[in-house]
Image 1 (cartoon, rainbow, N blue to C red):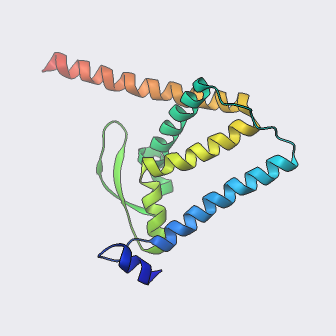
Image 2 (image 1 turned 90 degrees about the vertical axis):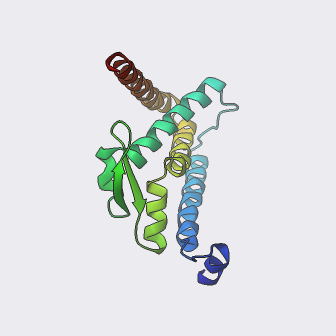
Length: 163
């Protein structure tokens, strides 16, 4: 892919092969779930109510922030990223390191938008196989999201009072 990468960006350092490998892992995971679910007789829901879409979306948002930005999960990202600074709350700023698959994995793990696609995929598969359990997990992640926003709101009111 070196020739394609050179045509893709001027520096030629975009890890297209690594991205392709990660996309293949994602697709293989989804395909494997579909095959196993079918064999086990998992019946897909005829529809997904709007409330469940909102719950899944909120949970995917929080799961992706936890995976991509939280200090406590930095040990997962450390082999693939380098810490560059502090974010708001308990978040850190990181950049990917290395080349090829290592760099692509770092790009994935340091990007909450990227990890949200993976979190959503896992949650949707879980929702199809065990909707009640998934709603409970999503409810917990949703409550954590609300708690975070309340923490930010409280901090903002304290800064206003002090300022």
